[in-house]
Length: 203
Image 1 (cartoon, helix red, strand yellow):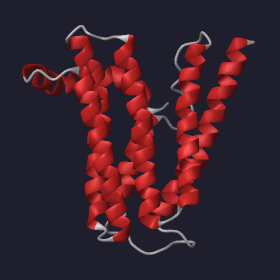
Image 2 (image 1 turned 180 degrees about the vertical axis):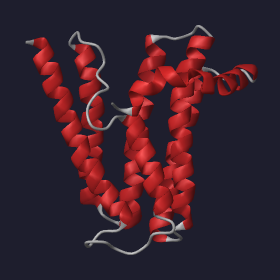
Image 3 (image 1 turned 90 degrees about the vertical axis):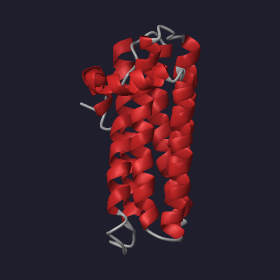
Image 4 (image 1 turned 135 degrees about the vertical axis):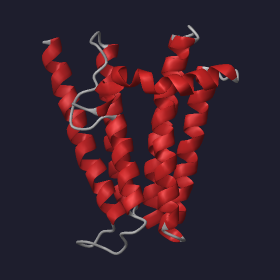
């Protein structure tokens, strides 16, 4: 089970945030854009963490968690305001993909390992693509597999926080380098899991 499947069970924790955004007149699309802005800031922090001061890794980790939380809040706000729409869903998914790309890009740029960054980004993008492509061919949206988006953000946030006190290399890679290896491997494995699940369902 991935954390994405737990979304229906966290609704009661969302209420204070949904009510707060609703009171100040924030729209779900506005929350989606705010979530993306947090991802961009996280990427910048990760670059600084690798190139300047590791304390920035901790800042980036916090911003990643904020991005993930806001990504749940925007959908709940849309339902609260009764404005859920296909256009809003499209915007949310597009911004999520760009957020994934910039966060991983920031991690890779910080340590200067662009090959690992490329492998991690392609794994993450293919995981998300296979999840929604299943829906495009008539199945339900697929959230299964080893790692979903919520899992990725949680792992990035945790490892990002650990990269502040844990420096040095292990087996030739920093902690962030191993994070990129993990994202690359499990990303492509999860994408293949979703592909074969969808393929079997269509036969």
